[in-house]
Amino acid sequence: MGSNTWVDYLGLFAAFLSAITFLPQVIQAHKTKSVKDLNIFMLLIVFSSVVIWLIYGFVKELLPVIIANGVILVLSGILLYFKATFKK
Image 1 (cartoon, one colour):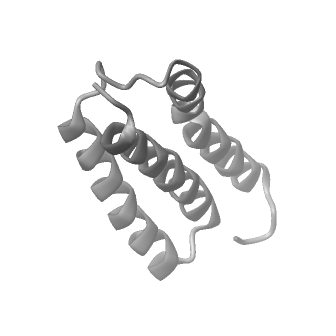
Image 2 (spheres, helix red, strand yellow):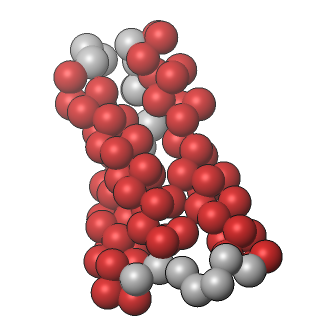
């Protein structure tokens, strides 16, 4: 990131908000041990897209993109794990 202008902070704040989008779902799924209403194809699309965004972020050296998509990758990976392991 450049000179830490307000735009850089705006990007980091946007990354934070994007990164936490899956957090309530992960918490709810963990509490209820249920992910039956989560569509596996949606989870796979999200997971795939954040991998591509991460590659893009690393190539372009865009910290907000790396942060947001790194966290979303972990959270969507957890949901995929729950989908595979929780009983139906």
